[in-house]
Image (cartoon, rainbow, N blue to C red; front, side, top):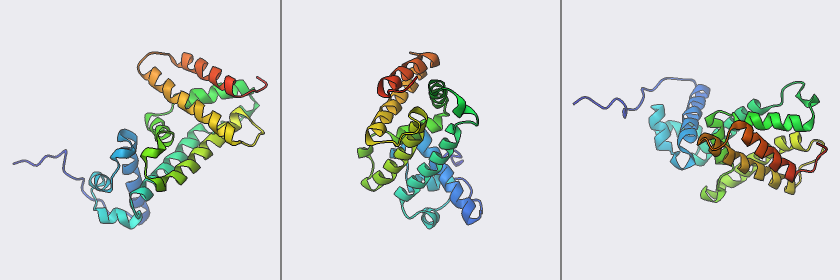
Length: 202
C-alpha cells in the first residue's frame, strides 16, 4: 500500500536553535492565520513542522507561550506594514486618517486574521492569555490613536472609541469580501464613523 503523501509528516531539517524557533513560529503562524486560535495545538504544529513535540517544548514551555510569541511576532510585522511613511505627517489629519484606513483595508489576509484574533471574543481564550492580548491591543490602539488624535495621551474612552473603529473595519472587510460594498464605500463609511467618535479640526 502506497503511503498517503499528504498526511505524512515533513522530513525534519537540522537547524540552529534560533532558526528552529523561527521555523516553529512560522508554522504556528500559518495555522493561526488559516484556521484560527481554536485549531492551534502543539501536536498539530509538530506534525506540520516535521518535528517532535518534545523539540517544540525545548523552545516554548506550553501552547499559550507559543501562541503569545506568534502573536507578538505577527504584531511587530503588521505594525511595520502600517507605519506612517516619511513625509505623511505633513498631510492634513483627515487625509492621513483616510490613507491609513485604506492601508488597513488592504492588509494581507494573514494580517487581517491577526486583528480578528486580537479583537475577537477574549472570553473564549485561556485566561492566562488575556493580559498579553490586552497589552498588544492597547499598543495597536495607541499607535492608531496617534494618527486620529495626535498630541493627546490616549485615555480609556479613546481606547474604547478606537475599538469600535476596529470592529467597524472587521465588518467592512466582510462586506467587501462578499461584494456588498466597494473599497471607496467602505472608506466613506469608516470615515463617517471616525468623525462621529472624534471631534477634530477636520
